[in-house]
Length: 131
Image (cartoon, rainbow, N blue to C red; front, top):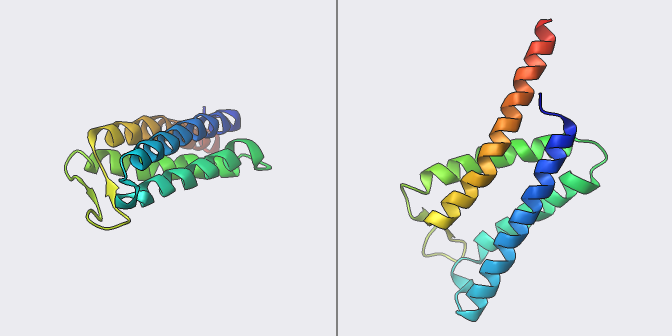
């Protein structure tokens, strides 16, 4: 059974991962004068980082952590899978989201545990209702 504590822990770990995948690419893109090519990708990771911080630490109850975990599981699973078949979304625009192998692995590393937590939570709540 997935507990509220596990959802909050997931959000805290995700916040650290999102922070790393925001800061490092921004630094390297700035150094290479490429930030204008896909700044939206970094902005999205920063947004998800801030949401994870809120859900993991600041929210009054675990509903935010559960919602965040479910959203990350769904969105990032789709990105992690389609990224192996297409090079990205909105490529050639300032809001490009490149889906290279590193991004695909990052998306799946976030999605798989989120989906496991959500699946376990749903299964346990169904089990409690059936009893």
